[in-house]
Amino acid sequence: QLLNKILAAAEIKRDEIYLTNVIKCRPPEDRMPHPADVATCRAPLPQQIALISPAIIVCLGSLAAQALANSSARAHVVRGRWCALDGISLMPTFQPAELLLDPAKKKPFWQDIQKVRDAYRLLTF
Image: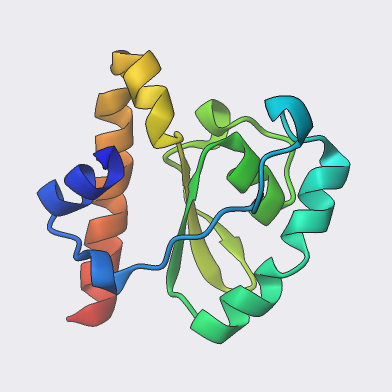
């Protein structure tokens, strides 16, 4: 719900975006996903991305950024900086749940969403 509120505030329509998770199910005992979990769950992502053909992908959290950008960098290190995946612009940022745990991340997250909004508007107008 927090993400929906942020998208609405940024004037990004929910029907203009597609959300998916790198990890499709929680690992046993609610542990953090291991690299093998990510590798297994990441397998269908290239096909999903090819089917949807997005102009921009927002990586919410370190796991998404690492899986898509093939990087070991944490989201707080690469967040806010554009990178690319097969010609698609990627914007790594925080997982929305992190904003509830650390309110200091709200402003940088909002700035990242504004960058995405502005880039998307340039592509669609």
